[in-house]
Length: 256
Ligand code: PEP
Image 1 (tube, rainbow, N blue to C red):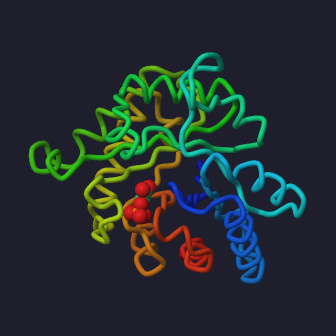
Image 2 (tube, protein in one colour; image 1 turned 90 degrees about the vertical axis):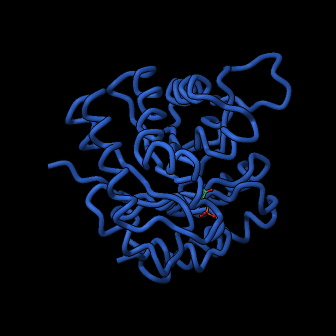
């Protein structure tokens, strides 16, 4: 029997500079420690802006904090003449455990299509950083195609492009639920996460489907996390706004 360790991940987006990051990660780690948070049972990770990562690395390393961290994006290239881009090898060098790939804000504002997302996923894996691959439908997609078709298609594009033995995390984030205060219902989340797991099974086999974690994201708070975590195919959450407050984020990690 494969047990998937839940992952509570906080996407800070373009919030909190490196000084604020130090205070926030410290407060988060101390709150988790105070509450006796079992890190081996529920993993906690934060995704600060790039300029914060070195400070977060130093803090986490110096205090052996039970918090993982990662980048919010990476380049599909390893290095070279790509002004403003960040390579997966730079993230690996900062001990980033994870990197978010294909967030809907990147897809929308930076025109990242499925091909770019697949190549970024491959780049992350190449450098030993676990990609958190985001998929999700817009409100228009939902109306036109139902909930599962678009996220399933987005995931397929990635699964077809990388090795089936790869360690990835999938995040189902309905675009209409992000930052809207209008979360999906736990049943809606389960329905799509189940379809995503079936897609994993089809493309990569049953073992990969059983071991790969699928997160729900979109207006998750401490008051609604339990409903999502009770679903069979939801293995954690990707949290935006509510991850900026370390006490609220720690409360989300204590969903049980
Ligand atoms: C996100 O952008 O990944 C997200 C889930 O945001 P929020 O929790 O603020 O809806």
